[in-house]
Length: 215
Image (cartoon, rainbow, N blue to C red; front, side, top):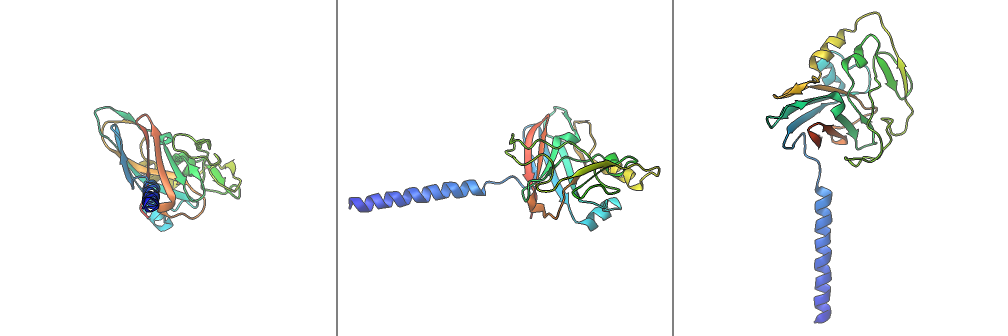
C-alpha cells in the first residue's frame, strides 16, 4: 500500500510539473495590442510587396516591412514619441531594426544598406539596439542581420524622389502627444518573413512594451 501511495505521489508531482512547464511555454506576447498605465500601442504589419505598393505607390525596391502603429495615451500625462522608441525583431533569425526616416529611404542623399553591398533607392543607417541581452532578453548580434555582412554607402541624386512626400505624410510623427497618434514605421528586414516571425517592441519614456502579430 505504501509503495502504491508513493507511486501516486510521484505521478501527481510529475503531472504538476508538466502543467507548470506547459503553462510557461504557452505564455506569449500579446497580439497586435498592448498597454500599461501610460500608453496603449496597437500595431499591424504590412509585409506583402503588393500591399506596400498599394500603400505607398512603390514597394521601395528592397527588403522593407511596414508597421501601422497607433499610440494612445491612457492617462493625462503627455507622452513624447520618437522613432528611436521602436524596434522590430525577427524570431526567425535574430534580425533587429529600428525605423528609417523618410529621407533615409527616398531622400536626395539616401543611405543604402544591403547584404550584397550597395544598391540604389533603399536603405539607411538607423542605429540598432545592441545585441547584449537587455530588458527584452534578446542576445543576438547588433548588426541587424544574422549571418551576412552588410555595407553602407551614400547615394546622392539631384532629382527629388516622388515617394518621399508620401513617406513623410504617412510616417508616425515624432512629437509629444496627449491624443492618439497614428502612422507608419518603415523597417528593413532582409529575407522572407511571415507576421508570426516578427515581434514589435517599444522602449521609451512610457516604459517598455512588446507584442507579436497574428499568423
